[in-house]
Amino acid sequence: MTPPRHDAGQAFPIYITVVAGLLFLAFAYLAVGQAAVNRGGAQTAADAAALAAAQKTRDQLADMWLDALSEPDQWQAILNGDVGDDFCSRAGELADQNDASVLACTQATLAYTVEVRTNKTVGDSVVPGTENRRSTAHARAVIESLCSFPPPGDDAENDDALPRITCHGQVWDPKPDDPPSRLPKPDDLFDVHLAD
Image (cartoon, rainbow, N blue to C red):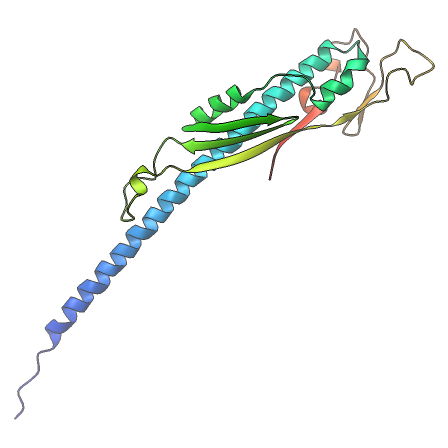
């Protein structure tokens, strides 16, 4: 009679190897997830920073337009963004609120490009070198003028009247003594959006 074989113990090392491999893969996927979350935070901070700087500029240009209401020869320069301040400092404030730092902020006429880096690292993981890695991202926000008007002096009937201004399909007939509530608001004059 042949003695019985005892192979039951030989599967255990294979089982341990497979489980160890699966655990390693799980930790590797966790590291990838941590990096993706960190990168998402960086992009959120960059978007918010660029939009904040652009919106601050939009608000300033709208205020300047109100101040120059009775001087229509200045309107075009304001609507073109040829005047105004650089609000990259506002980008820094919003990046800081999103736990990031601004690496670069550049203003072009009616646009801001911002690059940020997260303050938090990806963190410890099974992937070597991630404990000191920070994510970076950039965003570009554009301010688009929504208004047009005839050049001053084209209205032969009344040289003292202010030009009719059309903003995104809505027509305004401003008067020098109009209260701000009867005039276009900043978001009537300009659109602010992220661009590729």
